Length: 293
Image (cartoon, rainbow, N blue to C red):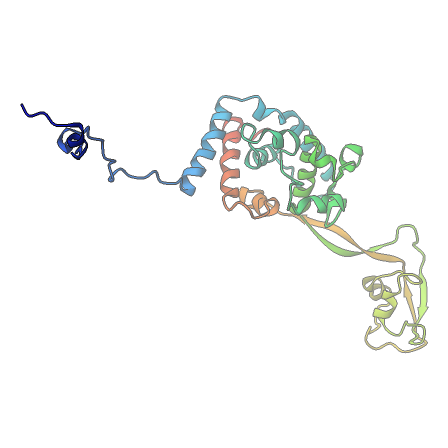
């Protein structure tokens, strides 16, 4: 045997383990399909399944507002029954809106404070209710529980949030217009002389004078039969009664469907709103026979 010195050994380059003896690592299968993102249909089906399970299992947190909604809609239906053409709204539509708007399990804080989402950032409905715009004054019931809705409590108190949502919906379901209304406190017949100098040169000028005159075009025409509004002259005496233009409900959108409610209440952010609302409402009414109105 030939012995090698240390210096000779250091000069030999170590080649390591032969490739054939190295442990083999599993190569990734490049043919494994990637996980595809959920489609819109997938998400909608998941959404429906969550609510179907909540309904079938009768989950308490999902039904916590039932009694309140039933009573609130009873109050609203009773108040609006003074309008001859009004048809009672099924309280289950409001519950269906609640299940469409909210998620008792996934969005607990919102569910406990603003379950119908009126008053969330960007919402256009809350200002209408707070400022009593459109026909809100005509549909909101009397009493502090309804009249006491404010910008602060409708986002903190779930009951006020639901009331505000109901008020806004009924406002949007109403058909209203500005009409001439005689002053019930002053039924006397008054007169005014046409005078361009005094700013009363035409019918329109007289109507615009709300401080001294206070009447409407309809009243002025009604009280002066045979007078052509475009052919009056200075010194001509005209009769009128006190009155003003006021918003009044002249009818209601009917029949009520998921599409009607979606168009009236939904801000347009969810293109599937009507489909979701219809699905949930069908869950409720399939068991009740739509008798809980």
